[in-house]
Length: 175
Image (tube, rainbow, N blue to C red; front, side):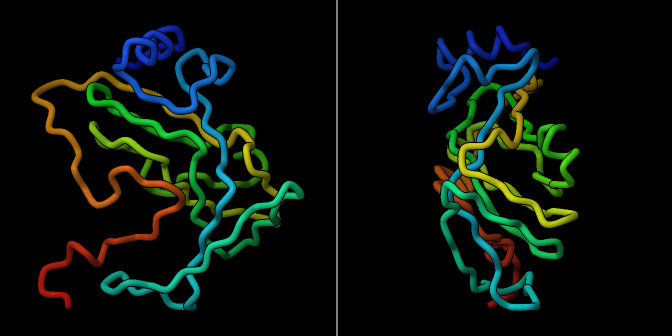
């Protein structure tokens, strides 16, 4: 089951869902709109190594916006901190930005029960595209879980701003 908009609002009010800041205007029939934060991150090296930390550069998106370039992966973040200890959150790009040729969540839309923080967005544009801080970029839906709940306590907990991959952290035998 998926929470409806009115149920998302009720779940926010009674603490089953945490969204901060929360705005009733961002509630949809079965999702909550999230906005693009003002920081972007990009990997510096031409080759990204899955088994090693990779250097990144971060920069602010000014009020004039920032033009995303094709062929470049940008890590952004939501303005909102979103999470739940009861529901499974899923983040998808809004269809309006998809129609502009922007992929918002390339491969990992599922959030863990118990994660609370800003969500890192994996942004990839088909054509040069100007984005702005605070623009509605994605939507989060909340699904009812079934079975015993084990809360998330992973390496991205309480994220603030874009988070680079820490895949290499979990690799056995990699130094």
